[in-house]
Length: 161
Image (cartoon, one colour):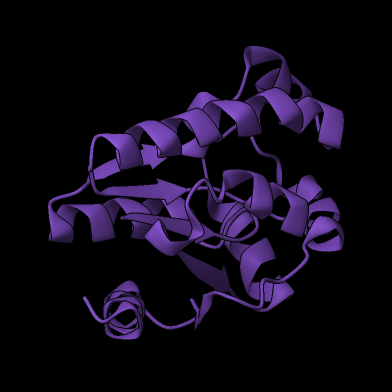
């Protein structure tokens, strides 16, 4: 099984995805680590990615998901997956993929991003991510405003893990 923890920047995909994988004893992959260097440079410069920019990144992620499923390896992937078309591309075997959509009010996300250090994604791109976001209709939706232990409990209960 593959669990994809998705949402806009600052929602806690990496932190919560890593914690979930750790609790389950599964492998964790952060999609940010799979971006081509040109994408990272573009985002670091405050320029939003286009669908064309994201295409090779999504194909790499699709390959990782396919490989995990072929090897019957359980995987947690932290990935923005903002558009429906991106999620469709990642859904190698839909019956084997569970989606967790992390969400929070824009003000909460902006505050988190303003306090974050050491990440290439500048707070100024939050608005473009929110504009690009097409909320999923087939995901476990979790508000990440509460403390992370509460959020983790909601995720595990919602996924019945």
